[in-house]
Amino acid sequence: MAPVAPRSGDAIFASVERVNSELFTLTYGAIVRQLLTDLEEVDEVNKQLDQMGYNIGVRLVDEFLAKSNVSRCVDFKETTEVIAKVGFKMFLGVTASVTNWDADGTSCSLILEDNPLVDFVELPDTCQGLYYCNIISGVIRGALEMVSMKTEVSWIRDMLRGDDVFELQVKLIKQVPEEYPYKDDE
Amino acid sequence: MPNKALGQNGYYLPFVSPLNSATASQIHNSFRSVNQCKNPSPFDSSKRMAAIYSLYIINKSGGLIFYKDYGSAGRMDTNDSLRLASLWHSMHAISQQLSPVHGCSGIELLEADTFDLHCFQSLTGTKFFVVSEPGTQHMDGLLKQIYELYTDYVLKNPFYEMEMPIRCELFDINLAQAVLKDRVALLGR
Image (tube, rainbow over all chains, first blue to last red; front, top):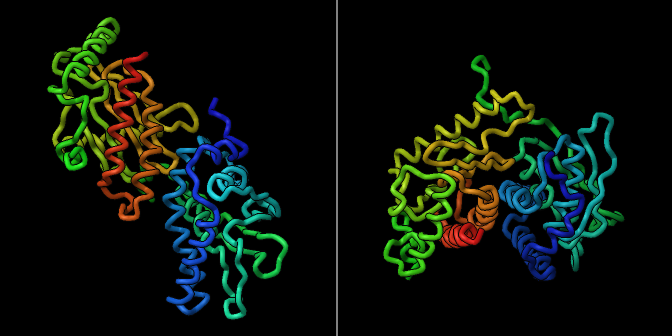
């Protein structure tokens, strides 16, 4: 019997090394600010943040797997639960809830009521199109790709735009089989 | 400077050095007695120090990205280690296909007359394996620990490119410590 995956990341969160959350928030703010200066276009910044998140995600997933002791998830539902309960807790210190499943179980929403990235942040009028936390969606996309799931992750609701919570939509595009050797005729 | 000695070829490992004073020989003696009652090895044990002969890390496409050997038994040149890594990668893949068990994750332990090979594959496809003395226990714990070191000191190194050979000094240092600690723990058991 495989070890049961932890249902909460509290224990791991307590054991991993952490940095001061204000330092983290301000550093992230400085990055976004610098990107806005360098790239000028808000859309370009969104894209860049997503790419940065992706690059982080493809590496971060190994740390997550190494330290959380989760075993292989049986389906996408379990995967999202693990991300929301263990992953978010481990790296951001908050938990998300999973809702809004569609009928065939390939798309859902992660609801974040609390997000340490946006402490102290308000968007000026010039950056209304900015997805400030777009790095998170990139991280999830990158991490899931490394465990053979192609996904699309996008923001539905954003507290910086006046919504009451953060809502992140995760859509499973396809599950890439990792079995090899591939058949000769393919 | 120990740090300077951590090159690609000359690894600084206090417990491997044959000139390393009384502690080394004490460790060695107690180790021999443990080993001999269980499983006599055909190697001349007086020339051998480490329970772990060597460590390999292979990326998801089967390329060797890290190799290090500990002690004199089973030492290999670069070509042989590359060959062994890709051979193991293929064997591992084939074993997954051949296994009658559904959802099999491949060979974890290969036992031979003169060595054991313990393998751990992460869910992302990177394989870590150690070749060790026959009958060495608790290698799965060490492999998991090496996986954590890999995530901390290799993947978080911004100058490391994914899937490429590992050249990270901090990883080398921490790995040497982990292996040493594992050895001490082994003697304590």
